[in-house]
Image 1 (cartoon, rainbow, N blue to C red):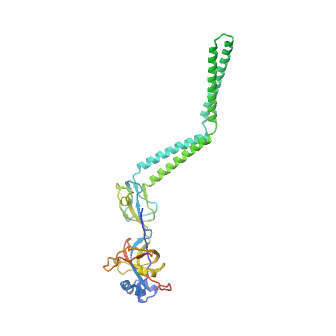
Image 2 (image 1 turned 60 degrees about the vertical axis):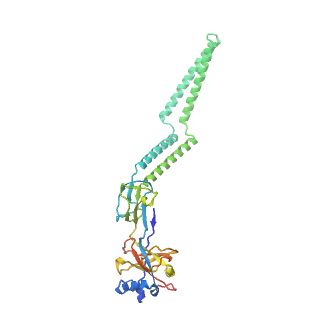
Image 3 (image 1 turned 135 degrees about the horizontal axis):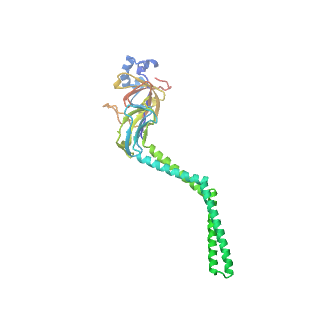
Length: 356
């Protein structure tokens, strides 16, 4: 998302050139209005700094684009619509992202259940089952032991061959092993989970929860929201069109800005930079509004000279000079189109720091 800075400015009345008081200088009288072109042509003689500027919203122009490639399913606002911070402006098709979220949530449910099983232990039915298995193994072992004793006596008396006694002995050992197995399983069911098992189950839960959060974050990127309270300045896409974050033009869907307050970005010539300071009164005019003056105040003075941002289209204009970006914040009641080119006039200060 790109942001173009927007600024407004305060301007000092050109009436100072005619020796007016500070308050008189801001009165939209015919005499003061007539002094504007004269002040612009000889700013050093009047104590004014004259420079071209452009109107911008106070919030800067904010481009809103898609972070994911996809197709616009809904475009909910149009140019000129007022929007509030967080309002949904458009949605991308999100079937794939919703499916991934559902899969991640199912995996989390499985991991939670496994951890609960380890923490809570076996169910009462399972406990009864393993105890019954132990009792059965004990009974089978006792029967095998009695059988072995009987065959051992008969073999000593020579009634049966020794092989039958040996078979009984092997059966007794098998029953002993089955009994031991049943008792160990009962101990495992009745006992608490081992530390390593519980640690592994808890890690599985954390991993599954992280995947749910990731899937939610990706799904949220399919929704385009207003970052500020403001107005939709431009809409670039329609529902059904595709967007791709690899290209700025392809990804951009809206430009919005807070136009409740306006600023003017002014290119102050390098020869005038020493005569501009914060807090100076200023005013701007525009050809479309005739001699009307729109008042403001200098709220920011740049610290780095650069190339011109605004061209006046005058044949005599120099393009090789350096400028210092200065911002004038206009009064709250001023309403001008964003992007309008204006002429700005800033009341310069003398060496004592006083407005001239």
